[in-house]
Length: 168
Image (cartoon, rainbow, N blue to C red):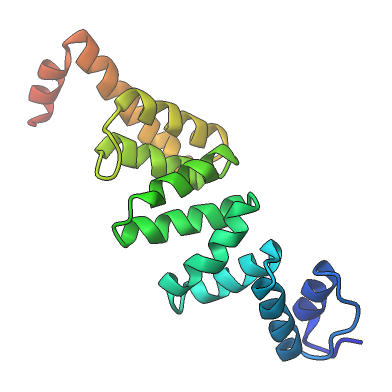
């Protein structure tokens, strides 16, 4: 059985289909072995544990989890890759957004609005921010409101009056 204080280890072992784990260390070895064998749940666990220590090293296990449609893993890989300047980070964020990760949708919407790694597209950015807001991402709701207002003002020609009143 599992020792006192190793409940998370025991739960993870059970989730991975193992019946008996004695210590947290044994579970970590088991999880790493399962990830090495390509188990996406184990790789997600390994990747997220590595993320704070070495983000670049966390990409490989998280990518395995992303391939198995783990939205959080896709979002994490996307963020790490974009911070490193890799364009395929956008692809991972897009997949996470398709899998309904609200934060990924917001980040992708913000990126699409600015256009550093993607083509700048206000309509698409607004759609992504609306999706993120609908999924419960409060920051996206604020961004969406601002983008929608600016978008409307530009289309109506009122943006010149509005920006002059604001001193911009």
